[in-house]
Structures are given as C-alpha cells and as structure tokens.
Image (cartoon, rainbow, N blue to C red):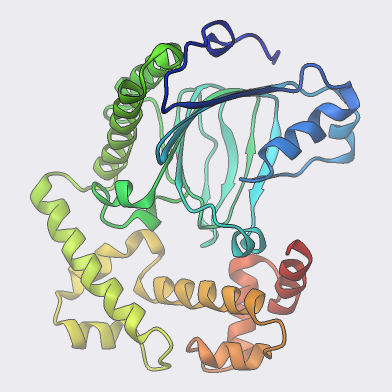
Length: 336
C-alpha cells in the first residue's frame, strides 16, 4: 500500500487549539522504512518485525490531530504485527482507550490477556483497545482511523470500560455503517475545522463508538445501563477493598453485597466469570509489584496479592501472560 498524500498534506489552515503532525516513511531508504515506523509509533505500541520484514520496503504514513485530551489519527500502513506487553504497560503512562475504525483492511489473531482469541476483522470493522491492558495482533495492509479517548469519557456510556478490550464490531452490526461514514467524513474535513468543531466531532464519534459497543454488549436503554453501572461499581469497589485477602471469592462477594447471583454472574460473563475477574486483578497487581520491587521475592508478592501458594500464582501468571513471573520481572527491568 503506497503512502499517498492525505487531505492534511494539502490543506493546513489549523486553528489555535489543534496540534497536528504528519509522518511518512516514504523518504527513508527501503531497509530503514519499517524501523523508522517502529521508532515513530513505539511510544504507544511495539512493532514486531521478522528478519524478512526488515529486508523489504515498507509503506506507512500517519496524520495525528490532538484537541485537548482527545486525539484522532488517520493511518495507512502495510502488514505488521503489533504488541503492547504487560512489561511495556508497567513502565509507561499510556492509559487511553483506542478505537480503530478500518476503512480498508483489518486485523487478525487479536489476543488479549484472558486468552480470548477473536476472529479476523473484515474491512470497515471496528476494534476497541484498552491501552492499560496487554494486546497482540496482526494488522494487515490497511487504512485505519483511530480515536484515543480518556477512560472517563468511555465510562459515561459503558459501565465496565475494561471489558471493551479486544472487542470488535463488524460492518453488519447496528450503527456500524453510520459510525464509519461519520468518521470518514471527519477524516476528510478535520484539517479545515476550528478547534471547537474538531473537539465536538471527535467527541461525538467517540461517544457513538462506545454506545455501539454498549448495544452489542446488551446495554440497551439508559435505565438498564445505569443499573448495571451502579451494580458493577459496587462490586468493583468491594473487590478492590478486599483484593489482597485470601478469602475473597464470588461467594464472599454475594454474601457481602446481597446481590442476585444470576445478575452478578452475568455482569462478569465477558471476563470469563467473577473468579476470573478477581484473578486477573490480582495478577495485574502482582505484575506491577514485580516491576516496581525487583528485590521482593516472588513468594511474598504471591501471598501479598491473595494467592494461596507461590506455585498457584506462578501457574496462573504463566497461563495469563505466557511467561514465568521471574521472566516478566527480567523483561520489565530491561525495558525500564
């Protein structure tokens, strides 16, 4: 896919309040093109090239618009494998949600921490990522428009924003085509918008995207969404307060909060169940401790986050993140 001129290259009357940048590998030597792209996007996500990838030309360009806390990008690129690892997350501060809208091409082999695998995404599909969670995926040659949205905006519509991670919408989903049309129009016109117009258009697109994922997840109607938000917030606060207690379990949550069992379990279906959600939070906390406290023993960290034994912790950590805690710690130290 050639890196051709975009509207932003041709029309640059940017107003105060819009920060804009354009980058293309077109002028780099062929053997440097993929590496130049890797350096450019490396502050957000890692590109994992093979030896053969580095030996052939690579085409990519990106236009980026920042308005306050909201960012919007228009990217064209060849096939590549992308990864945001737990080690990487532990040493940076990128925590926005990224919504990728594919006008051309798509993704394959999206892998998220719970080991859920999503099938390949077809043209004009939409992928939601929580930049605070690990992800690995192959992105085929594509044109993709991306919204980077703070979590507080996402939570206004989707009561459990962590559960958005890795979800996809296809062009046949409700509102998907309207979303694509709105965002394609934004890409055509943003270069000539005022800051207020751009902020409104990006914000409306982001809210529309989150609402579409909410509908897909069964959050139909404001009352139902609000009820789920209240219940989820109550459960999440209780789990956070008791996360490091060995006795914390779905049964103790039910006993403490007096919630309907069926409703509580349905609320955490997307996480593989309430037990899986608790285990995931404990593992995330342990991963942070492994990176932050290199001299603390793995056994102490395991007991400290509520696991009953170091062996149980090591098995769970390896299943979730594909490596032993000691290997993760070494990677985090090296990345830092």
